[in-house]
Image 1 (cartoon, rainbow, N blue to C red):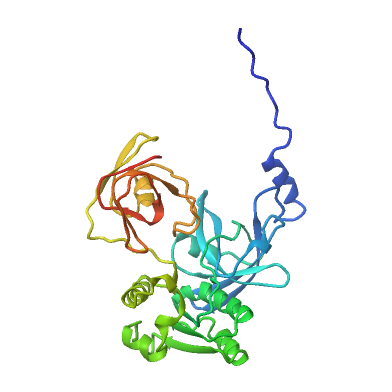
Image 2 (cartoon, rainbow, N blue to C red):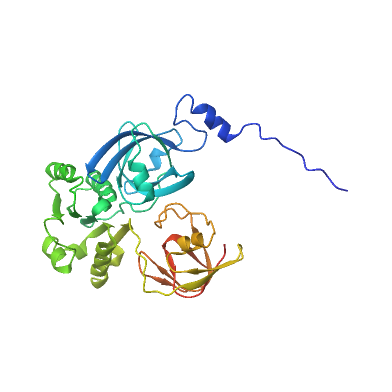
Length: 340
Protein backbone atom coordinates (compact mmCIF):
# COMPACT_ATOMS: atom_id res chain seq x y z
CA UNK A 1 0.00 0.00 0.00
CA UNK A 2 1.39 3.31 -1.04
CA UNK A 3 0.84 6.37 1.09
CA UNK A 4 0.68 9.75 -0.51
CA UNK A 5 3.21 12.28 0.75
CA UNK A 6 1.39 15.09 2.47
CA UNK A 7 1.95 18.45 0.84
CA UNK A 8 2.83 21.15 3.32
CA UNK A 9 2.78 24.58 1.73
CA UNK A 10 5.33 27.12 2.89
CA UNK A 11 2.98 29.85 4.04
CA UNK A 12 5.70 32.36 4.84
CA UNK A 13 8.68 32.70 2.53
CA UNK A 14 11.84 34.39 3.80
CA UNK A 15 12.44 36.25 0.54
CA UNK A 16 8.89 37.64 0.59
CA UNK A 17 9.26 38.82 4.19
CA UNK A 18 12.58 40.47 3.31
CA UNK A 19 11.00 42.13 0.26
CA UNK A 20 8.24 43.68 2.38
CA UNK A 21 10.53 44.57 5.30
CA UNK A 22 13.03 46.48 3.19
CA UNK A 23 10.22 48.82 2.09
CA UNK A 24 10.22 50.15 5.66
CA UNK A 25 13.96 49.92 6.36
CA UNK A 26 16.50 48.85 3.74
CA UNK A 27 18.45 46.81 6.31
CA UNK A 28 15.49 44.88 7.74
CA UNK A 29 15.49 41.12 7.07
CA UNK A 30 14.11 37.98 8.67
CA UNK A 31 17.40 36.07 8.98
CA UNK A 32 20.02 37.77 6.83
CA UNK A 33 22.41 40.33 8.26
CA UNK A 34 22.16 43.43 6.11
CA UNK A 35 24.22 46.50 6.85
CA UNK A 36 24.04 50.06 5.59
CA UNK A 37 27.26 51.90 4.78
CA UNK A 38 26.87 54.79 7.20
CA UNK A 39 30.05 56.70 6.29
CA UNK A 40 33.07 56.47 4.01
CA UNK A 41 36.42 57.81 5.26
CA UNK A 42 39.62 57.78 3.16
CA UNK A 43 42.66 56.66 5.16
CA UNK A 44 44.94 57.11 2.14
CA UNK A 45 44.58 57.17 -1.64
CA UNK A 46 43.80 53.43 -1.76
CA UNK A 47 42.72 52.57 1.80
CA UNK A 48 39.12 53.32 2.80
CA UNK A 49 37.35 52.99 6.15
CA UNK A 50 33.66 52.08 6.01
CA UNK A 51 31.33 52.40 8.98
CA UNK A 52 28.47 49.91 8.78
CA UNK A 53 25.09 49.94 10.51
CA UNK A 54 23.98 46.28 10.80
CA UNK A 55 20.41 45.14 11.33
CA UNK A 56 18.98 43.42 14.39
CA UNK A 57 20.29 39.99 13.32
CA UNK A 58 23.91 40.98 13.91
CA UNK A 59 25.12 39.54 17.24
CA UNK A 60 27.29 42.43 18.35
CA UNK A 61 27.54 41.09 21.90
CA UNK A 62 29.43 38.02 20.67
CA UNK A 63 32.11 40.12 18.95
CA UNK A 64 35.67 39.95 20.27
CA UNK A 65 38.30 42.47 19.09
CA UNK A 66 40.45 40.93 16.37
CA UNK A 67 37.55 39.10 14.73
CA UNK A 68 36.33 39.71 11.21
CA UNK A 69 33.17 39.62 9.11
CA UNK A 70 32.48 38.26 5.66
CA UNK A 71 31.11 41.00 3.41
CA UNK A 72 29.05 39.99 0.38
CA UNK A 73 28.63 42.17 -2.69
CA UNK A 74 26.93 41.33 -5.98
CA UNK A 75 29.23 41.75 -8.98
CA UNK A 76 27.86 41.02 -12.43
CA UNK A 77 24.93 39.18 -10.88
CA UNK A 78 27.22 36.91 -8.84
CA UNK A 79 27.53 37.04 -5.05
CA UNK A 80 31.18 37.53 -4.05
CA UNK A 81 32.60 37.47 -0.51
CA UNK A 82 35.70 38.63 1.30
CA UNK A 83 36.75 38.77 4.94
CA UNK A 84 37.57 42.08 6.67
CA UNK A 85 38.71 42.68 10.24
CA UNK A 86 36.47 44.83 12.40
CA UNK A 87 38.56 47.85 13.38
CA UNK A 88 36.30 49.24 16.08
CA UNK A 89 32.72 49.29 17.32
CA UNK A 90 30.80 52.46 18.16
CA UNK A 91 28.58 53.07 21.17
CA UNK A 92 25.62 53.14 18.76
CA UNK A 93 26.25 49.55 17.63
CA UNK A 94 27.91 50.37 14.32
CA UNK A 95 31.23 48.84 13.32
CA UNK A 96 34.06 49.89 11.03
CA UNK A 97 36.16 47.95 8.55
CA UNK A 98 39.03 49.23 6.41
CA UNK A 99 39.30 48.14 2.79
CA UNK A 100 42.34 48.29 0.53
CA UNK A 101 41.52 48.98 -3.12
CA UNK A 102 42.81 45.70 -4.46
CA UNK A 103 40.98 42.65 -5.76
CA UNK A 104 37.50 42.14 -7.16
CA UNK A 105 35.43 42.48 -3.97
CA UNK A 106 37.49 45.26 -2.37
CA UNK A 107 37.39 47.41 -5.50
CA UNK A 108 33.62 46.98 -5.73
CA UNK A 109 33.13 47.68 -2.03
CA UNK A 110 35.20 50.87 -1.99
CA UNK A 111 33.21 52.19 -4.96
CA UNK A 112 29.91 52.01 -3.04
CA UNK A 113 28.59 55.33 -1.70
CA UNK A 114 27.22 55.96 1.78
CA UNK A 115 23.70 54.59 2.06
CA UNK A 116 24.47 51.42 0.09
CA UNK A 117 23.40 48.06 1.54
CA UNK A 118 25.67 45.01 1.81
CA UNK A 119 25.26 41.62 3.44
CA UNK A 120 27.63 40.61 6.25
CA UNK A 121 28.24 37.55 8.41
CA UNK A 122 28.33 37.22 12.17
CA UNK A 123 31.72 38.07 13.78
CA UNK A 124 34.13 35.18 13.28
CA UNK A 125 37.71 34.07 13.81
CA UNK A 126 39.97 33.31 16.77
CA UNK A 127 42.63 36.02 16.32
CA UNK A 128 41.79 37.50 19.71
CA UNK A 129 43.73 38.33 22.86
CA UNK A 130 44.71 35.30 24.93
CA UNK A 131 44.82 35.59 28.75
CA UNK A 132 48.49 36.05 29.67
CA UNK A 133 50.64 37.71 32.30
CA UNK A 134 53.44 38.22 29.77
CA UNK A 135 54.24 41.60 28.25
CA UNK A 136 52.83 41.98 24.73
CA UNK A 137 54.24 42.62 21.26
CA UNK A 138 52.04 43.51 18.29
CA UNK A 139 53.43 43.49 14.74
CA UNK A 140 51.57 44.77 11.68
CA UNK A 141 52.23 45.64 8.07
CA UNK A 142 49.93 47.24 5.50
CA UNK A 143 46.24 46.51 5.99
CA UNK A 144 47.17 44.04 8.72
CA UNK A 145 46.94 47.08 11.01
CA UNK A 146 43.13 46.71 11.05
CA UNK A 147 43.13 43.57 13.21
CA UNK A 148 46.17 44.71 15.22
CA UNK A 149 44.63 48.11 16.00
CA UNK A 150 41.51 46.34 17.30
CA UNK A 151 43.66 44.10 19.52
CA UNK A 152 45.64 47.09 20.79
CA UNK A 153 42.50 48.96 21.83
CA UNK A 154 41.27 45.85 23.64
CA UNK A 155 44.67 45.33 25.30
CA UNK A 156 44.66 48.83 26.75
CA UNK A 157 41.22 48.26 28.27
CA UNK A 158 42.17 44.93 29.85
CA UNK A 159 45.85 45.14 30.84
CA UNK A 160 48.38 47.53 32.31
CA UNK A 161 51.53 45.60 31.42
CA UNK A 162 53.89 46.89 28.67
CA UNK A 163 52.95 46.52 25.02
CA UNK A 164 55.07 47.40 21.98
CA UNK A 165 53.72 47.88 18.47
CA UNK A 166 55.94 47.52 15.40
CA UNK A 167 54.07 48.85 12.37
CA UNK A 168 55.37 48.79 8.78
CA UNK A 169 53.32 51.08 6.54
CA UNK A 170 53.45 52.96 3.25
CA UNK A 171 50.51 55.27 3.98
CA UNK A 172 50.54 55.86 7.77
CA UNK A 173 46.95 54.63 8.15
CA UNK A 174 45.78 54.95 11.76
CA UNK A 175 49.09 56.54 12.82
CA UNK A 176 47.27 59.58 14.26
CA UNK A 177 45.02 57.32 16.33
CA UNK A 178 47.98 55.21 17.47
CA UNK A 179 49.89 58.28 18.63
CA UNK A 180 46.83 59.42 20.57
CA UNK A 181 46.70 56.03 22.30
CA UNK A 182 50.41 56.24 23.15
CA UNK A 183 49.83 59.66 24.72
CA UNK A 184 46.96 58.26 26.79
CA UNK A 185 48.70 55.04 27.88
CA UNK A 186 52.33 55.24 29.10
CA UNK A 187 52.66 51.43 28.85
CA UNK A 188 52.37 51.62 25.03
CA UNK A 189 55.52 52.05 22.96
CA UNK A 190 55.23 52.65 19.22
CA UNK A 191 57.77 51.71 16.55
CA UNK A 192 56.39 53.29 13.37
CA UNK A 193 58.29 52.45 10.19
CA UNK A 194 57.22 54.20 6.98
CA UNK A 195 58.57 51.89 4.29
CA UNK A 196 58.58 54.63 1.63
CA UNK A 197 61.16 56.50 3.72
CA UNK A 198 62.97 53.56 5.33
CA UNK A 199 63.66 50.44 3.27
CA UNK A 200 63.32 48.35 6.39
CA UNK A 201 61.98 44.83 6.84
CA UNK A 202 61.46 42.68 9.91
CA UNK A 203 64.80 41.07 10.76
CA UNK A 204 66.38 39.53 13.84
CA UNK A 205 68.62 42.57 14.16
CA UNK A 206 65.70 45.00 14.02
CA UNK A 207 63.48 43.19 16.49
CA UNK A 208 66.34 42.74 18.94
CA UNK A 209 67.08 46.45 18.67
CA UNK A 210 63.48 47.56 19.16
CA UNK A 211 62.19 44.95 21.62
CA UNK A 212 65.13 43.22 23.29
CA UNK A 213 62.93 40.77 25.21
CA UNK A 214 60.63 39.90 22.28
CA UNK A 215 61.04 36.15 22.90
CA UNK A 216 59.50 36.60 26.36
CA UNK A 217 56.44 38.37 24.97
CA UNK A 218 53.01 37.23 23.85
CA UNK A 219 53.13 38.22 20.18
CA UNK A 220 50.29 38.98 17.74
CA UNK A 221 51.19 39.53 14.09
CA UNK A 222 49.15 40.35 10.99
CA UNK A 223 50.41 41.50 7.62
CA UNK A 224 52.07 40.63 4.34
CA UNK A 225 53.34 37.11 3.79
CA UNK A 226 57.05 38.08 3.81
CA UNK A 227 56.73 39.74 7.21
CA UNK A 228 54.69 36.85 8.56
CA UNK A 229 57.30 34.36 7.44
CA UNK A 230 60.01 36.44 9.17
CA UNK A 231 58.16 36.59 12.49
CA UNK A 232 57.43 32.87 12.36
CA UNK A 233 61.13 32.14 11.79
CA UNK A 234 62.11 34.38 14.69
CA UNK A 235 59.81 32.64 17.14
CA UNK A 236 60.75 29.19 15.83
CA UNK A 237 64.43 29.96 16.36
CA UNK A 238 63.65 31.19 19.86
CA UNK A 239 61.58 28.00 20.42
CA UNK A 240 58.62 30.11 21.56
CA UNK A 241 56.06 29.42 18.82
CA UNK A 242 53.34 28.86 21.43
CA UNK A 243 53.57 32.59 22.21
CA UNK A 244 52.99 33.63 18.59
CA UNK A 245 49.46 34.28 17.29
CA UNK A 246 48.97 35.15 13.63
CA UNK A 247 46.36 36.30 11.13
CA UNK A 248 46.98 36.51 7.39
CA UNK A 249 45.33 38.75 4.81
CA UNK A 250 47.32 37.59 1.80
CA UNK A 251 47.82 34.02 0.60
CA UNK A 252 50.93 33.16 -1.39
CA UNK A 253 50.98 29.95 -3.41
CA UNK A 254 54.21 27.97 -3.74
CA UNK A 255 54.60 28.17 -7.50
CA UNK A 256 57.50 25.68 -7.49
CA UNK A 257 55.18 22.76 -6.68
CA UNK A 258 53.95 20.52 -9.49
CA UNK A 259 50.29 20.01 -10.33
CA UNK A 260 48.75 17.10 -8.47
CA UNK A 261 45.73 14.91 -9.31
CA UNK A 262 42.81 15.47 -6.91
CA UNK A 263 39.65 13.38 -6.64
CA UNK A 264 36.36 14.57 -5.12
CA UNK A 265 34.60 11.31 -4.15
CA UNK A 266 30.96 12.45 -3.85
CA UNK A 267 31.12 14.67 -6.94
CA UNK A 268 32.87 11.84 -8.80
CA UNK A 269 35.23 14.29 -10.44
CA UNK A 270 39.00 14.34 -10.90
CA UNK A 271 41.04 17.45 -11.65
CA UNK A 272 44.57 18.79 -11.55
CA UNK A 273 45.41 21.18 -8.68
CA UNK A 274 48.20 23.74 -8.88
CA UNK A 275 47.12 26.49 -6.49
CA UNK A 276 44.94 26.14 -3.43
CA UNK A 277 42.39 23.34 -3.59
CA UNK A 278 39.37 25.65 -3.51
CA UNK A 279 40.38 27.68 -6.56
CA UNK A 280 41.58 24.55 -8.39
CA UNK A 281 38.19 22.90 -7.80
CA UNK A 282 36.37 26.02 -9.01
CA UNK A 283 38.49 26.12 -12.17
CA UNK A 284 37.41 22.51 -12.78
CA UNK A 285 33.76 23.56 -12.64
CA UNK A 286 33.05 22.48 -9.06
CA UNK A 287 31.42 24.75 -6.50
CA UNK A 288 32.51 23.74 -2.99
CA UNK A 289 30.99 25.68 -0.10
CA UNK A 290 33.29 28.51 0.93
CA UNK A 291 33.34 31.85 2.68
CA UNK A 292 36.35 33.95 3.59
CA UNK A 293 38.96 32.28 1.32
CA UNK A 294 41.49 33.13 4.06
CA UNK A 295 41.29 30.14 6.41
CA UNK A 296 39.18 31.99 8.96
CA UNK A 297 35.54 30.95 8.66
CA UNK A 298 35.81 27.11 8.32
CA UNK A 299 33.09 27.04 5.64
CA UNK A 300 35.30 25.06 3.23
CA UNK A 301 36.47 22.54 5.86
CA UNK A 302 36.26 18.96 4.65
CA UNK A 303 37.81 15.52 5.14
CA UNK A 304 40.98 14.65 3.24
CA UNK A 305 40.73 10.88 2.89
CA UNK A 306 44.24 10.29 1.55
CA UNK A 307 47.22 12.28 0.32
CA UNK A 308 49.42 15.12 1.50
CA UNK A 309 48.67 18.86 1.52
CA UNK A 310 50.68 21.90 2.51
CA UNK A 311 49.11 24.61 4.68
CA UNK A 312 49.73 27.80 2.68
CA UNK A 313 49.75 29.94 5.83
CA UNK A 314 52.00 27.91 8.12
CA UNK A 315 53.92 25.66 5.71
CA UNK A 316 52.86 22.59 7.72
CA UNK A 317 52.47 19.30 5.86
CA UNK A 318 49.44 17.09 6.57
CA UNK A 319 49.86 13.49 5.39
CA UNK A 320 47.39 11.82 7.73
CA UNK A 321 44.41 9.95 6.35
CA UNK A 322 40.88 11.15 7.17
CA UNK A 323 42.04 14.53 8.50
CA UNK A 324 40.18 17.84 8.40
CA UNK A 325 41.56 20.47 6.03
CA UNK A 326 40.42 23.85 4.71
CA UNK A 327 40.35 23.91 0.92
CA UNK A 328 41.20 27.62 0.66
CA UNK A 329 44.55 27.33 2.47
CA UNK A 330 45.58 23.83 1.35
CA UNK A 331 47.86 23.06 -1.59
CA UNK A 332 48.23 19.48 -2.81
CA UNK A 333 51.77 18.11 -2.74
CA UNK A 334 50.77 14.55 -3.71
CA UNK A 335 47.70 12.91 -5.23
CA UNK A 336 44.79 13.73 -2.91
CA UNK A 337 41.34 12.24 -2.35
CA UNK A 338 38.69 14.38 -0.67
CA UNK A 339 35.28 13.41 0.67
CA UNK A 340 33.27 16.00 -1.26
